[in-house]
Length: 217
Image 1 (cartoon, rainbow, N blue to C red):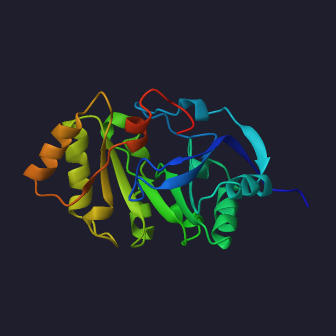
Image 2: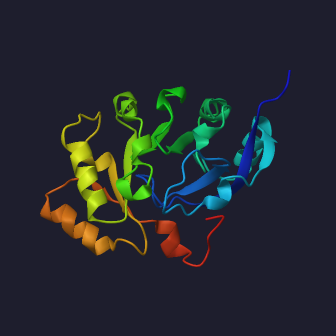
């Protein structure tokens, strides 16, 4: 039987910089390939760059680090068909698995035991027409929604998106993340306070810890 493989751009052990797990040590698996081209993307090197690895080899590397928290990111993890099998195998080892996805693929392909962090693309990304809105109905109480914002238009888009939808979690699982250099965190925080939101302001902690390091953090 042919062993299942994935194209891996990088694997590293670092501090989780985003999501509700921010601040915790985490093993990262960055998979290659993405079907979107967001205007603010900071991991364009993952579009094509990578090494083919078996799921067994990836798992062995994960277990070499003293950490039970794993994030699978990209690129776009669901761009590769064997990603759900990798997720399932890591979960079977009693690891906590986060999958960060751009929201354009059905998230029900993923084992429900993992934490699904689903981007909702705002207008400035240039990819908001690719949002698969049915994904919202497939989330559960441990999952998270993320909105990356460059400007006021993006903020208003996010407000409208969450206004009339019902989620299996409170607003604390909804993340508003400003794009560095485009939207000041204080500006976004001010809007959130003015509108009485209970969503979570998300800053990229790893970029504060290692401001001059672009990869492996």
